Every structure is written in structure tokens, then in C-alpha cells.
Image (cartoon, rainbow, N blue to C red; front, side, top):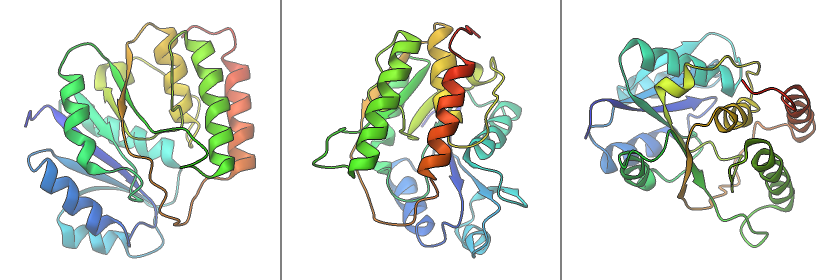
Length: 226
């Protein structure tokens, strides 16, 4: 495994899923460094991470997924990692796809890879399906690049790409913001097919609040090119 790559997992109240997730990640990519950002969890996430002997960066208070990603990418830059794979802590991203991201990135064709789920009512809750279809269409139009699954947090991002940008958001909307800015600046965006998994666990997405944030993000970026 190339030592210049890093796996980043933002975690909030993930005590029930982290042991299995970390075990599966280590099994499929045993040499890939894992960094978890514990984003102010109120359960025993910190204790679990200590038992798992995972390198952990800690927010004392919950700051949002986007801020957790920023903390992780700052660490990646400081320690010289070339690219970062991000995946969620809730087991809705199969670690078994990690080698597919690495292989696609190593072709040299892409600066950013997005895990693309099958966007279909047969496999997704109706509200998620509608939101994803709409946001993916809007972002595709804004970037001039086809984005199948704009809401996927399973990604591989070149550290150099990340640090060319200033982000105005800090929640889930940061994942849309990076696609818009990366596409408009000509970075090459690719896709890796991944499983569509819904565990039925608790979601920390607020549909109304996050939809409003997305609308504001689109409005702010409707003419901007940086």
C-alpha cells in the first residue's frame, strides 16, 4: 500500500459501528493509515477508539461533518499525505470498495473520485432519492461535469486540490461545495461504483435545514468561479 494515502473517518456518536468498520478497513487495506475525527461525540466513541488503537483527532464539541473533514485534511497536509479517502462511520460505505478508489486514483486521470451509488427508488428511501437526484442535477449543471451521486461522502480527494480552496460551509453542505468549486476550477472528477446501503440507523441529516443550506450554497456560487 502506498504510504502517501490516508483514510479519514468523521465520527459522531458512532460507538456501535466503529469496531466493525475499523476491522473491515484493516482487513481489506491493512497498510492504509486510518485517522478518525471524533466530532464531539457524547457516547463512548472515544473509549472505543482507544481500544481499537486508532489515531484520533478530537473536537471537544460537535462542529459538523464539514469541520471534521477540514480537521482531517489539515492533518493530512501537515503529514505529507498526497490524497485522502473519506468514508462515513455508520457502515453505509462498504470498506471493501477501498481498493477500487485507490486503483482509479492511481491511473492519474482524476483529482477527485466520488463513490456513486445506484440512485433508484427500489434501493433508496424516497426522500433521499428525490434530494439526491435534484442536487446531483444542479451540481452537474453548475460544474459542467456529470455527477451521479453528489450526496455520497465516500470519496478520494487529492490533498493539493483541497488546499487550493477556501470553504464557506462547515456542515454536510461542504461536500456539495467542494464538488462545485472543484468542477468549476477544472479539476478532474471521476466516479467509483459502490454499494447502496441503508442500515436504518440514526441519521444526523436535517432535511429542512440541510436543504436550505444547499439552496444558499447554490445562490452564493451561481456566478463565482473560485
